[in-house]
Length: 575
Image 1: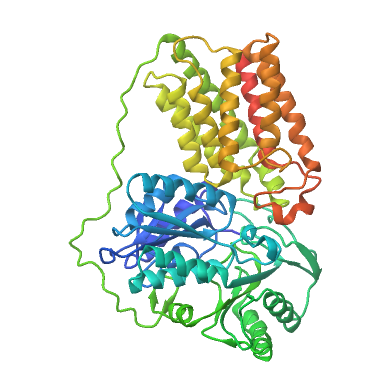
Image 2: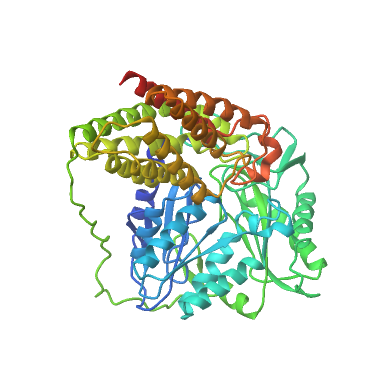
């Protein structure tokens, strides 16, 4: 259980402040995360890791000479926002481009993808290397759908060492992707982890049992079996990983291995498991080079461990064993030249000041209504945070309630500030969408941010809003969500509530209903279809590997969307 915190809502921010205060020789804080305290030489490719917090020493603990140039830090188990990734990348860039690397999760792919697009528009070369090492999360035939777990650490280390040696941009990408292609992981859980401020773990493992194939975001295993002895567990892990060996592994391959603790498994227990695992690997004709046993990628206080194996060639072996000096991981004598201190400290790009265009009275009235609706949504989502978190924990990572709370609160605050400038609804929803995406992070943050911005583009500022305007805005929001998230009806996502909402809104508007009545009727349909997602199996997102466990529970994203639409309908009815 996570016992030490001040405010659960600021746990990540408080952690980062303490981490930077403890390691000033290695890191300095920038918006969105941390970068090296001393800038590397000009012309070095920057390697930036990232993901949700709760995994220390991944991701911020490996920033330093020989390892990463920066780390983007999201909320607990939640992907950081595109703005955060962009900000850290700008701070870490040394003039040769930025290579992001992170685990294969939908929210990370969305946000880092948007950050890459923005960087490249500004002339900074950027690329994402996505880690897919978890053999339990998808079959070999669908390896691109696998989660990134402790293989993250291997890929980060190899890419960082290559950049430190002077590899150019394309070569850093090549060797990072090569390391990912040759890395496999399998993990087990003995008990779930507990988010700060929560009384119950995200999942529980029955006494005398263990979960096989867990994720690192508080997701339970894909199956359960009796708790084995240490030697039996070593056999399960070694057999499971070696069964997934690359086709060109050879007869007597050289590999490196990580036996990783997830936060509450003692080092002594890990060494007992490694005693047998190392023997089994040798008996299988595998030569282990520079193994690691310890906590390198954790999941708060989860009890469990995982085995990661990377099949080496001379290049990968050299890069794996190259020196590194970071707060959580040190190897050899770095002796790596850095800048002489004459380069200026990073300054975030100055925001482009947009000319404030004061809206007519009708536009100001619509903007005020938007603010009231967002205020109500933020207040009610705060009350529903625990409920949504429990729902998400069934087959996901349990962060949906907290992400929605943080995102909606930030959106309401930004909308209030923007409306005070006398602007219309489009500008208010643009500010709200950006704030929601930035503070919530994760898949839902990206989707809600995009939806609010797209919806606002279709609301007039020079006249009263009609039902047709609202329908067009909702359709634009849906198109934006599907373009970004690539989800379709039946995937068990918020799209399963949003599509019926838009269809019902269009039908009600066509029959002559006013804005409030059309919205309320459509919200009723969204609520019904959100409840109906309980019978679906997820085909995308973090819940996909636990699809069977998800059956019987409505999708949290569809549920929170239906809630918000209902509350907005109430505001419209009162206006």
